[in-house]
Length: 205
Image 1 (cartoon, rainbow, N blue to C red):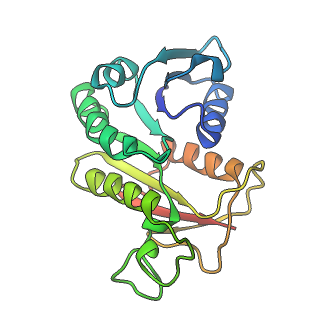
Image 2 (cartoon, rainbow, N blue to C red; image 1 turned 135 degrees about the vertical axis):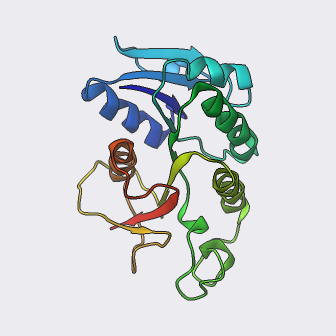
Image 3 (cartoon, one colour; image 1 turned 60 degrees about the horizontal axis):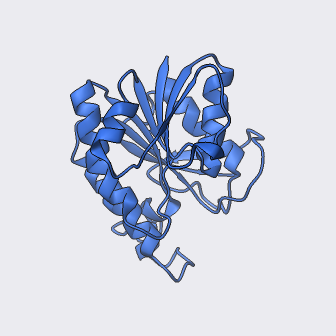
């Protein structure tokens, strides 16, 4: 399989690339700084920007599935690039998209009419990142793609251990954290898994 990846130099994105290459897939990664990603025979590195429609189109030329591990970086890059990605996927005839979100855009258990970041469940003072992820989520909802948004809670560095829990549209009850390794492993697994099509997935220990 050929996988197009955005955000391949981030913490989660790097691990997803490792999984894909280890399993024999071909990967094309759109990166701003090629020095941040290790060369590999089955890895095509395209230097460019997620805010360039042409750079995204070039990255997806051979892709059969797309993974976006872009983060917010204190900017609006995520929500500004999502329409470009949706259009590029439509032009290329690609339906499957897996993205990394945040637990803040899952539904609240205590106030189901609210998202977690809007509710008393959220302990974060700043909602800027969650609002940016929400914009991305709403853009995906309006598309005809087969998307899945993987929504980790607190995300410390760490390898995959495999004993995590997942739940559609909600954070698993009592979940407080999930490692980068397990988040990447689960997100990568969604390429071949149709259980969570057009859904958010909460993930936590």
